[in-house]
Length: 208
Image 1 (cartoon, rainbow, N blue to C red):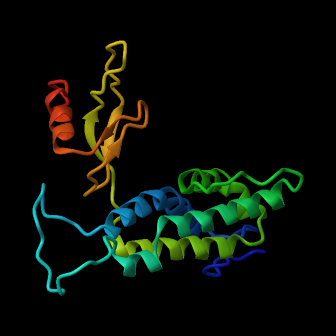
Image 2 (cartoon, helix red, strand yellow; image 1 turned 180 degrees about the vertical axis):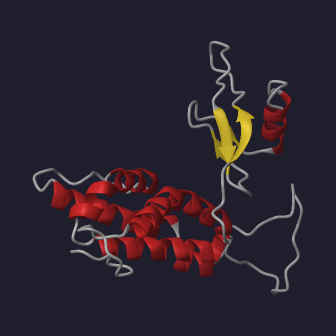
């Protein structure tokens, strides 16, 4: 193999050229963030705290989810695809190892594929198919959330206090439009107006 499986450029023996290797690395890095934002798009947006949004549709019961988006693009499907590629890459590289345990974790599997990308583009025969399928997942997500990829917003540091009176202090971030955030360190959940006001009020002066 002397040419890129995606564009035909000379690669010096690899399955992807440098340009498409970099693009695949970027896709693997951004995919979990994109699908987190897709999850936010599944729930109809509101204009603000407690505001009612009028619609043209007839009154009556309706699904709380945007089912058109749910059918086409969702975290579960992306996680399943990434897990299948991770299992196959591991099978080829380490045939005697057991496959990674379920359930699928899109963050972990994309990170794992990214870390193995050097070996993948050098030795994995299905690299072109992997790149095409991950690229399609990215295109589907961008068709929902727009371009460029959404970025986490830093809100400050966690103000939750444990049983010993110690403030957590871990960094709190959220995706644009996200109204429920769980601290990754202490697991405290911010999901009400009161929570957000307390978070803002108790920030150190320099971060507030």
